[in-house]
Image 1: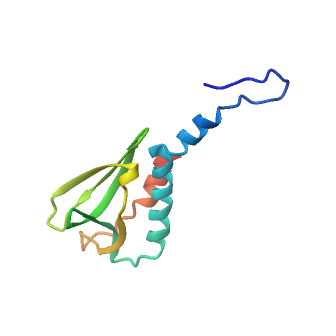
Image 2: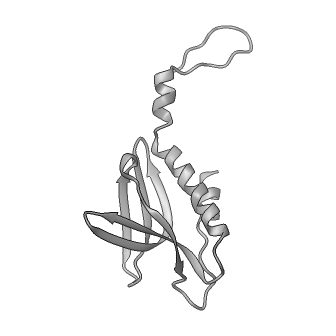
Length: 125
């Protein structure tokens, strides 16, 4: 819902509650995570790619991140592969997101290291 002031040259105004709620949308978290991944990847050497480590219930899961998506209002999904090659998909509520970006040796030794931040940034544009 937007309010129109009816004055020439003014833009519609959203209620403050709506603005605050939209700032908590998964799409905003997605944008921030993509920026963090891009910044992290700038520091990686050619033999490493971005990975993540998640710790939950005393267990640690480490995987190569291949993709990221969101579903508003509150879900973020990480896609990737374990070292064994098994496919993983982590779906989390934005209030529970806690992960460690890490440098992992590239999975395909004969291929260039995967850089996903740039691809995610383009997809989001």
